[in-house]
Amino acid sequence: MSKYKEIKGFKVQTLPTDTLASAVAGGAWSSGGALNTAVQNMASAGTATAALSAGGYGGSPAAARGVNQEYNGTAWEEKADLVVARYGLRGGGTTTAAIAAGGPAPNNNLVELWNGTSWTETTEMASGKENGASAGVQGAFLMFGGVPPATGDVNTFYWNGSSWAEGGDMNQAKRNLAGFGLHNAAIAAGGETPSVTNNTESYNGTAWTEVNEMNTARRALAGSGSTTAGLVYGGVPNTAKTESWNGTAWTEVSDLATAISTNGGTGTNSTTALSFGGESPITTATESWSAPSDFRQINLGQVYYNSTAASFKVTEQPAANGTWSTGGTLNTDRESWAGASGARDASMTFGGYPPSSGANTEFYNGTAWSEQNNMTTGRHGNGGTPNGSQAATLCFGGQPPSPATAFTEVWNGTSWAETNDLTTARFYIMGAGTSTAGLGFGGKAPADTGKTESWNGTSWAETNDMNSGRGYGGSAGTQTAAIAMGGDDSSPRAYTEIWNGTSWAEEADLNAARYGVGGAGSSTDGLCFAGYPTGAITEHWNGSSWTEIADLGTARGYTTGCGATASAAICLSGTPGPSNYRISEEFNSSVSNKTITVT
Image (cartoon, rainbow, N blue to C red):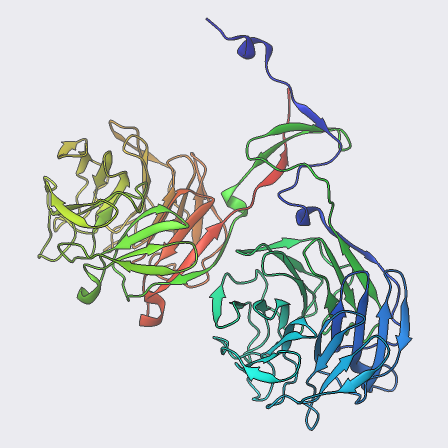
């Protein structure tokens, strides 16, 4: 009997605007009052409606400025100048209690305090800073990065209101970077090393940790906000790009009206901010950022009617719109088909080459990799169950022993234990499913094979073979709905086959034939990435055809990957070069609204 809902349908909300992933996703820049004096590369302090711009470079004629300007949310007013005019300095605090420190030699260690009326020199930094970054307030202030040396500085200095002390060094020396947050919870983003970087680091009051990179590398940019709700905007190459930081990742949001660099920036969160001055050329322009306080939350799969646009819309997460970013670095070098399982931010990898890595197991938490208990038998070219988890997964096949092994091991969340072997020993085998409902297919035994075996949680059973036997392919999916892609090192293949739980069917080929590839997703929404000879190519499978999308940041082969969805995957390990063995990359597609045709 049909249900009432199936006959009647369901109610679709009518909304005046599109739904949003967050308040900041609906933010936009608008024009503010112009500075009285055009400056760039100045110190900034305050909030979006009560800001301070101190010092800087520019105007006519171009020179170091000591000018001090205060913003009330509408207009700028000139206040008492700095004691020493200079540029390349950085600041923090409020319009009644600010600090400005650094600048070019011989004034690069100068520090001045603002009391709302005038500036006063105070205790100098032990070592000078120019074109660095800052975070914090007048009585608890942080300076980091900058010059000297010419390539950038790693030093961090902390001001406690009366004296300076050294803090933890940054992981990457850089200058002309953005900084925001507090003295014990700060973010450093972008800059030059001397090459322009998208590197991001987080400070906890003691040490810096590398976190997810910005989407766009740039230097001489402005930043504001906190370690969980920040913004960066502008930068060189001259850009209007704005990105928001949610404590974990960067997202591109609405651009500035004008491309700018060496601009000032203030704000305590990601919903309000102020950008002022800068070079485009040297300008008095001010822009104010505002995000809605009241908005409709976006939810994957929701359907609604946008009454303003007069269109029906659906919220989806299309993998085709995704991008790769650098993830955590593995603790152990590995390539040659290590196994992998789990969701992108809760994944694991096991096995691999060289032999020193063959038994190694590591967990990923979305930021860093940690070593776990080793496998019983070290090997490479082993298969895994990509839909498994850090609590339960399966490893099977591989080598050594030579030429191939049938060994199977099960992971219980803490340790590995040997269990019943594959019926056919092989290496460079592909896998799908979980630790209780797995699938192993293809590989070399030692010749190419299409043998397929089904795992019921206790033992393996042979089932129907693949149409084209091969190893070194990518795989994804479940025991009843799997996909095999590419493979065969002797003659790279573009083959795609889909498993329906009973048999394999040949489908549309990859656009680029390759082997040693990684895979993620499902048999209807999958990814194939990396491999030889193409290296960085990523293709998306929509259930009927492949489309080339965003390339990996680092070309590689003999890699592996996992992720239950194509919109959130991870690629880890690979060759060439030892430096690339450990680099993982994360694929992410943001949730978005799409207009749908209703008939």
